[in-house]
Length: 305
Image (cartoon, rainbow, N blue to C red):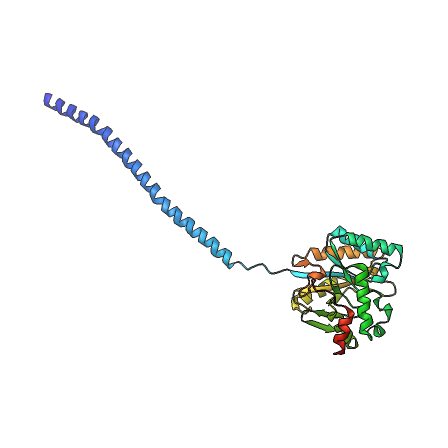
């Protein structure tokens, strides 16, 4: 009986002794295991992060580059006249770049037109270009018979109005002499327009016109059709320079509030197209603004050769 009691006491003592050791060992093992797991996850996370970064790079490299925007050149002819200030005000309100091709004689036809010209010169958001001095006085065939007189007409406009660029538009003709573009709609005028270009003028025509009634001066109402034609020409690369479109309009077509509203809506529809960018005429590809205007004497010499 005494021996059995001693054995039980010894077993209890051993249990008391080994139990804390067991729990301590288990705790150490748990800590070691957690530490090991943490260390093992660190390189795994690094590998995952590396793969993620490479995936982002590969995705970015596969993304399509942004297409260059199509350039729109808004040009208005024959000012200053009754519609000019209303067009100018709309241009300011819509904050859209526009090039005005000015007829020199119109600047001096009346105090109102002279005042309009002065206002235009103060506006740095627009561009003023040469559209001759007399606009051929409406007698186009006769005008183009004498290259000497045509050059003098453009020089008179350039000298009296002090244009800051050499971009010009021929009166009554859709003609181009910019860089490699050489186009004349009426061939009888070709030699004279060549001479104007040799005198130092960059001759700009147009790709599409916003037409108007020459009796009532009302602009064509179907602007949706005009916008579609512009888009189609750019998509088909049928403009004189692919990706660049020159629109011709006329100041005098926008004399009343109804027509100004059409113009304003037209501007807004153009601006809402994310493919379009609006550019001044002197920034057309191939235009060399720094080129000096040659005297007509030199041009005459060249014509005789």
